[in-house]
Amino acid sequence: MGDDVTKPDSDRSDDEPLRKLAEAAREVMLRTEGRLAHPQACPSDRAFAVFFIDAMLGFVCLCTGMFSVNLLFEGWVTGGYRAVGDWIMLMIASATPLLYSGLDVMVGGTPGKLLMKVTIAGPARLKRALLRRWAIKGAPFMLALVLSTLSAPFGLLGTGSAFEGWMAGVTLCLLVGFSWWLIASAVDGKGQTWADWMAGTRLCLPGTGEGTTGFEPVMSAPRDESARRNA
Image 1: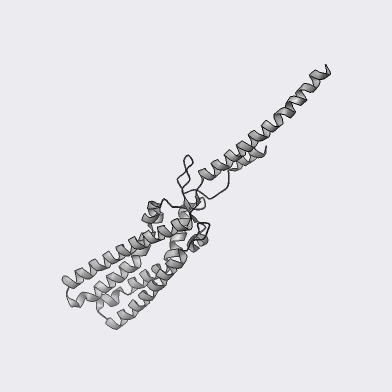
Image 2: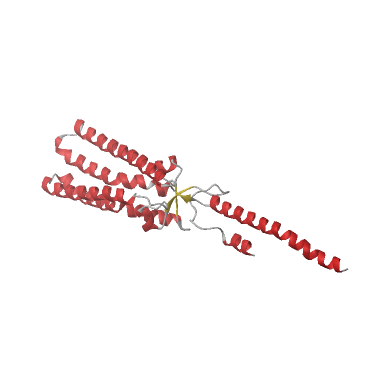
């Protein structure tokens, strides 16, 4: 009878290593699923490739627009309206970076990010964070666009000296804007640029878990899984 009583205790002691092994395997599985289900930080080399592709495509768009306007006003418009052409070129130079980077908000990424499969992750209200990121990177270009708009009467009326002063102000804003663009695009080891740091976002590789779109909050393993693991 004594043997019968002690047998369950010995069975439990024999099963203890197997139970610990099963729990360890389950914990590893949960951690792996947590990593796969959420976006991972974008490596610096891929972030540089994104920046290079977007810089080249943006430059092509800018040059195409300015060349088209210059060709139009050189060939078809008389000399008295050349100032209008200069004003339009200022507007194009100011608006192109804003429109190009606005693709992050409108379609979920610039061509460079879409080609390199890089997404932007952030807080739950990602649209607001994306708008904040876009405004931070494009602030000098917004000022240049405002100054270009205000200079329109001087360009249309042909007041050359005043218009040249406005052009100098817009050109200074553009130089500051492109310099800031380079600085704000530098990526650290966590996939964050200066603009991401200020906006609360980061560049990520899309997760491979079910239902993941790449635009999810950066977070650790879900709380319910952690609770079950600790239970």
